[in-house]
Image (tube, rainbow, N blue to C red; front, top):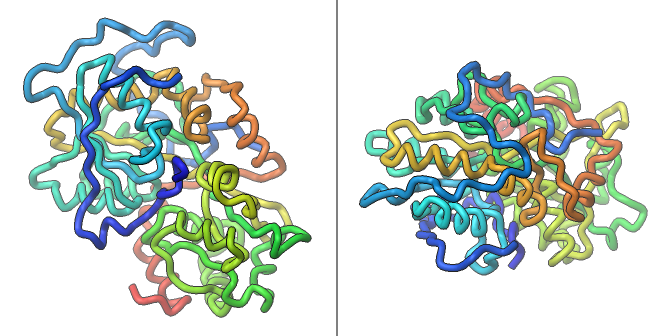
Length: 395
């Protein structure tokens, strides 16, 4: 199984809960845009970080305080894609091991779709179980607006791209990624559709599918990109109405679309660079990434990163702070590309590994536009409702 094959799956919501895994350090760990992107989330918080960020190349601290007694755990609810039950060589798998070895704190991990983890934290707000939430925008902003987060300024947050840090200090990106689309190279040997309007061609009838906005993080991203590229909400939703005759229908999972594109059941689907690149390389050789353009013919995308926040009322808040600090550490940020084919969010981290070179090259010639995530969160419900009406999809 690919290390990011399950990303954005929402099936666990229907099953009634999050998958929970206890992790311990039982063995040594394996050794046109900036990498961090520009998500337009606001400016860095005014509060200073809890401690100075270590200089690059400095050895990790070996005398970190050990957790004691019942406080020796930290619970994280995360959007899926960074942990794998079958492949230990994934970002969370490796970083959690290193974190436990360093601090003695055991990580209890639960995952779901992007919206599912925010919903779970909201359901538990009277008696919080999670210490840290990691999910995609706009769901982290929804959590903030619902009063589910508390302010914390992590060590090294001053090194994170300011557009990926909340102005109120309630969230920051820990791994970067970008919205993308994929096409089947055998079914479309002359290349992918160049523009959104190319997707209206009758040849794509029931040969394209995108995950559902409001359910899947990447699907919500498709809606955001269309609103940007068409210049208005009305124009974007008018396009989705026209596109519906070619669309197979709703999909709560983005990852599930990859295999359908690879077999030729679908010719085009949405995704994200991290997932699509590694899965295309390891499991789906017929799939290739592209970025549809607007009327001006210029391909576009935007940063769609994993964002972390400290849960309000977290039972082990101090341990949650330590975990967020660790995920922004130099080695963890270097591992983002080396292990997970993602992008570091710290601007001072400059990876040189082959994975980083490959995924960065995909963005050459692509315009990365900024997103005001607070505005997205504010209009989220009305935009999803408008999409449902335009496509005839039950809400």
